Amino acid sequence: MKTTVFGLLLFVVGLFVNASNACEKVDAFQTQLASLMTWEEGVSTYGVGHTTTTYQKGEWTGVSQVDFAEGASSVVLTAYAPNGAVITITTDDVEGKVIAYVNIPASTELQTVTADVDVSGVKNIFFTASDEVVVDTWQFVKADVELSDAEDSIVDDLEDVEDSVVDDIENVEDSVVDDIEDVEDSAVDDDEKEYTGYLFGHFIGENTGDEEQIYFALSEDGLHFKDMNNGKPVLVSTVGEKGARDPYLYRSHDGNKFYAIATDLSIFNRGGWKKNAQGYYDPSTTGSPYLVLWESENLVNWTEPRLIKVAPENAGMAWAPEIIYDEETGENIIFFASSIMDPETLLKAKPNAIYYVATKDFKQFSEPKIFIDCQKDGSEDGKEREIIDATVMKIGEYYYSVSKDGDNAENGGIRIMRTKTLLNAQSWEKVLDLDELGLDLEAAGVDVLDNSTLEGPELFELNKADRTDPNVPEYGIIADRYMAGTGYIPLKTTNIEDRDNSKNSWKVLSDKEYSFDKLKKRHGTILRITKDEIERLKKAYL
Image 1 (cartoon, one colour):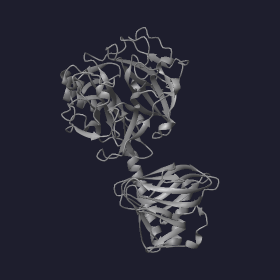
Image 2 (tube, helix red, strand yellow):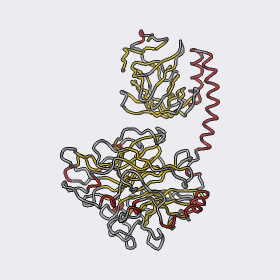
Image 3 (tube, one colour):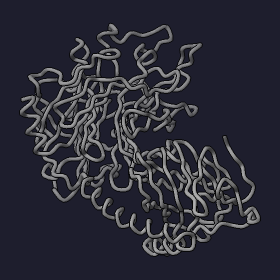
Image 4 (cartoon, one colour):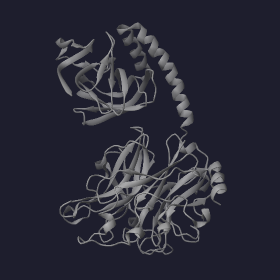
């Protein structure tokens, strides 16, 4: 049920009160009870005098006429969430412009949580919950005010409402500081981890059912890999189409778990790349809407495979999945390529694009949405080009994607794009296409670095010991030479923004500088690993 309340009404003991303040602005910089609302959908409010508001997943409240004056730089909430939750704050509408994602760690006691914002003027604002959460108060902080001062003012304001609540909040603030310090200690930044090796997960072909499974190879320098498990697959799909192509290995944000995810597709079991009456390759239009997922705590012992449904309605396939952690929402973003089919004509209603679903627990998943949309630049009549095989990494303040842009016969390339807002599909902007770098390809085994020769790019960071300069971050991009059938080609760069290689930061490696061992490496993934993980993998698979 959606309730519209005219003016600003405070909910106390089952009644909305203070209706006389209907036309007054709300001071964003004073502590406000969460029960102060103009609109709401589904929430419950509890208490006498001093109240708290309980949201379930998808429920929201709105407050009109919130005055941010010349601007706010952060927001402070007192809240708790039994399972952890994110409060999304928007302006103008429930689905309006997002100004903050407030991540609330799992707890059953009130805690003070903050998030950065950039908002000014008078706005209607909305608070939407991703899961069960109880909110006590909210307050925004002026751009020129220290956050610690704002937290002090929250305590002072709450004393005017109910002295006993202040005591509870002060105690919670102390415990939250300890909890945050513990979390910061446990969630070590990747740059601080002592990564000393690389695990390559891949498939090897499609001539037999076993070739379309997940194989492992190990490297301690990022350039020379050794096949593992006597050249046999480590992970075998027994579900869906009984094939696992285009795998991706993901280390959870807290570092306590690993996930292997792959395309549910077997070209061998389908009898090859057959074309249908509409002229499409059948696996791309009648493919599985599922992905195959495994879980592990140590990279050696894995769960049985299971299918997760991710593709949009009328999707022709779900290909080449990868996962990235969204720092703003606290969710794992699973992204993949899908085409959308017209069920009547069986023609593509939309070319292949990159979609995503979000999850916190890999059990419940959001509805699919566009992640990276089809590109149009250079196309005749604004025609959208296909896009598949996306890989994404955060470098500095930007997220960078590398993908196959355009079908084999279309204008396009192996494209690098960037954005600061991960889940805003329209925010991605071109950085470069690999063929624009003018690199020397004499030893590359291809004539051009574009979509006619390459697919399945993978972006990864080199460990400090393996960089040209240990103090300068360096990144590898490998791409599958699918037309030549000769496997992966590696490139390195110290500056992904060097768009014409004028700084000589890009290099294509010759076959004398790397080795992928005997098995042909088809569309795969590279995971940086620690010394202990290397030894564990060697013991199990070498």
